Amino acid sequence: MPHPAGLDFLVNKSDWKQHRFDNSPTPNLTNGQVLFRVDRFAFTTNNITYAVAGESLRYWDFFPAAKGWGRLPTMGYADVIESKHAEVAVGTRCFGFYPMSRYLVIEPSAVNEAGIIDGAAHREGIAPFYAQYNPTTGDALYHAEHEDTLMLMRGLFMTSFLADDFIADRDFGEQVVLISSASSKTSIALGHCVSSRGRARSVGITSDRNQEFVRKLGCYDQVVTYDEVRSLDATQSAVYVDMAGSSALQHNIHQHFGDQLKHSCAIGATHWEERATRDEPLPGPRPEFFFAPGQGQKRMAEWGPGEFQRRLGASWKGFRSFSEGWLDVKRGVGAEDVVRVYEDTLAGRAEPKHGHVLTLWDK
Image 1: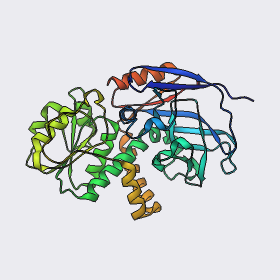
Image 2: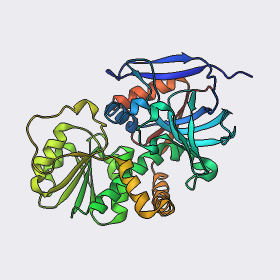
Image 3: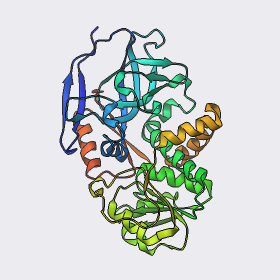
Image 4: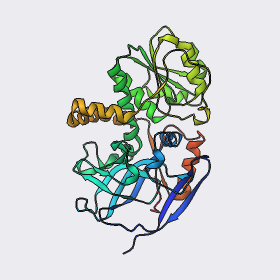
């Protein structure tokens, strides 16, 4: 029986406010290929960051599209519905990066219990982490009843877990870790990791609109609004983790802390419209981009895969339990829901407590 036609959500790479849906033909596989039916995927402000860094970090290359258009990567679950690869069985359910589409075709280059690696030509040179699909049967973090939370939080939690580990690994001597866009889920995860480790205080920086929500979370030792940054104690040594991508905020923090700012790294761009860079040099350290897969590969080599998964799993378990107290999962079905969530997130209208899980299949 033939599969229904495909459907793909596309974003204009030069103007993210422009988007469209394309109908695509039913995929026809060649030898060695596998066809996923994308069941559900999560969408958060983290996915807007993929558009911001689409060219520099090759996020647009994950899933090729028509010239000038891109398919944003999302994290979700999909099922193998057709396979022409001897080691991948129909019915295999996998967690990984998927487009906002009905289907994904991959070309496995390596298959084992822990993961399936897509070796398609357009993936060449991209960090293996982004090309790995984890079968639920061999996934130590998987529980069927927690799929929505895993989709929403697992990828961004991994980033935060590795950012916290990077800070501890480098030992900047920081007394506080400043985290902007404190209501974003990646920031919440980092705040939780920093506070749980206990080697420094976590300070969440947020908007007036979201400050009550952020204060009630309990994962930050201190919460200030963007207008209150210069009220922070600048005699304390600090690390700044930029989740907002606002050049004005970055400038204020560097000016206020000066030499007491021991490291400044960028991860997200929730305030993508404020990302224009300033010409004048910043006091303190030169801002650096934090590349989570690099720290992950370093720790895998040092700790070994088993120990890495053990530490990640222990930290994830605590964060997942913490998330149950505030995360409100919202399911969306079909093209209209996908557009609504995308536009609300892009415009900063999404409620931070909501976690959106979407599908392009009518259910």
